[in-house]
Length: 136
Image (cartoon, rainbow, N blue to C red; front, side, top):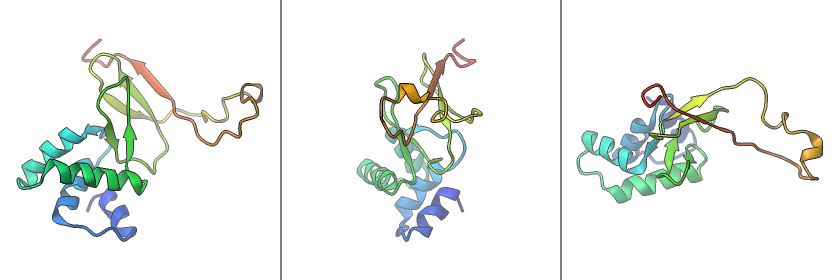
């Protein structure tokens, strides 16, 4: 069983065949699929699954905090199942490929106190950009 599916079951999420297929499609490292890509892969496994079901299921997973929406450069939203594993993203500026990266240090700790302007900072999102090996 996938890690994502186990987490969803642990939250009492009712697992239908459609929801199971969406969770299975999203499972894995470095998975950052668009909703249309999720639908295409899910339809390969369960031909009768509708696009609306995929969108609704992704929305539920995001609302539960089990999947993150990732938006980069005005491209289609992508869905990241590694919501419980702290990481940053490395994005290809040309093709949009996204990889999870785990730099050392903390982006929160790296922000000097005099640059916080009185904010109580609770989160930081860092996106590294460049060209992937295929585009370089």
